[in-house]
Image: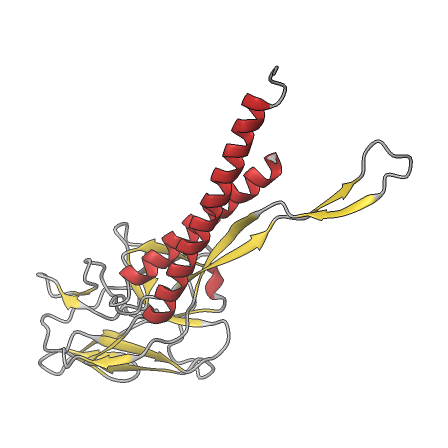
Length: 261
């Protein structure tokens, strides 16, 4: 009975953590460049049950020991593009397939490079191109791009030209060979703990194109996510009902078994 109690509890914890992942996805359905997270649920190893107090210790069978959420992984598939006709919006289209991902390079509060797929940029009060949270967009030279105002242009390879026709730099595009090495850092930013990612600029093996006036949308499927969320709630409630039944049985066992008539 105790084993069943813990199995039901592990199922509740797992579905609660899965619900947290799905809620995060739904909250970011409209966030440009957001990559949906997926929860990997695994079962604990089964236990082999044997008959006790017998000479042969006859095997009875296996007993499930519950489930757990093993990891939370991001889906880096390309999102759909939406035309905004806003000059500070830039969408990144990658031509590579497989595990690799291409990313914009921006600076964090300490001036260190971090990465994003959110091309919803703006121009700050000093004329630098930044993310909506103030992270400056970096060029291939590692310096922030000074565009002066919002009347700049970006060609398909990332060359940035200001409003008077002067080239101000080349927008850097980084390549992550394995996106599992990237860690979400909040505000649409990604960190890479292995140092600095290599640049894809002028690398023919890493084709890409930039489109000004467009945004890459979130790749969250709201219909599928809502369906999975409802399933997670039902599984949580089912385990909760089982847990209550075990609790009532244990209460009766403690109060009634062995009671003198």
